Image (cartoon, rainbow, N blue to C red; front, side):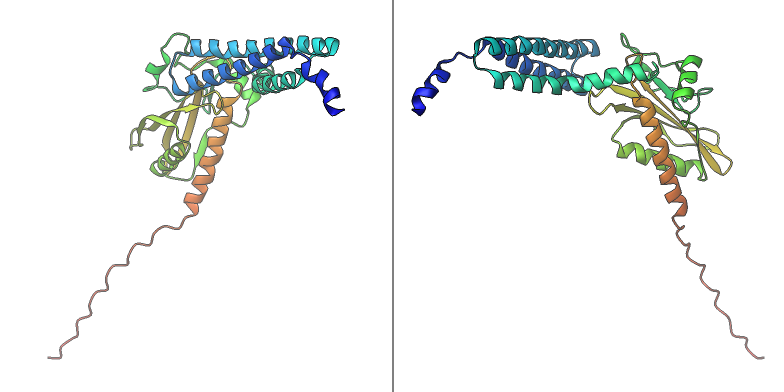
Length: 283
C-alpha cells in the first residue's frame, strides 16, 4: 500500500520556476560575495566592484519574483519544488538584509562623509592626499561649513580631546590604539617642541571593506596636550555613520588609555649613593 500511494508523488515533475529561483539566489549570493572580496583586496577599481555588488542585489530581487511565480505554479498544478523556493527565499533574505539596513541608515543619517573634532582647523591629509585623487574619489580638502553644521546636529559629542598628559605620551598612547585597530599607517611623526605630531592611516569598514582615511593631530598645550581627529570616506557622498562611529570610539579609547597612563605610578628613580662619612682623626 505504501508504494501505491507514494508512486504518484514520485512521478510529479519539479517546477522549473522553483529550480530557476534557487539557481538565481545562489548566483546572487556568489556575485555579492565576489564583489565584497574585490573591495577588501583592492583587486579592481571601486566602480566595477560596486557594479558587481548591485548586480548581485538585482539578481536576488529577480529570484524573489521567480519564487512568487514558482509558488503560484506549485499551488495550481501540484508540482514539486517548494523546498527549493524556500531555500531561494532564505538566500535572498540573507543577501538583501544588510543592504536594506544601509538603505534605512541612508535615509536617517545626514549626507556627509567627512567627520572631524575641529571643523575650523581640521587635521590635513598630507601623505593620504595622493591616494584620494582617483576618478570619483572625494577631495582631500575638508568638506566645509555645511558638513560641519550637519555634524554638529547629528553628532554633538565629537570634539577635541584634551588630556593631562605631555604631547609625546599622548602621541604614544594614540599610536598604540591605531596599531591595535590594525589600521594601515601611511605616515607618522612624533611631536616636537615647535611641531605638532601627526598620524595618517587607512581604515576599512567592517563588512564591505570601503577605505576611509584618518588623520590625527597631537599638539602640546603647555604641559598637557590636545588631540584632533579627522575621518573621511574616500568614496560616496554619505558614509552612513561609519566615520562618526570610528571617531567617537577612538575618542573614548584615547581618554580611557590616557587615564590609565596617568594613574600608572612613575618608576622610582634610584636614590643617589650615600656619601661615605670620613672619620675625624684626632690630632
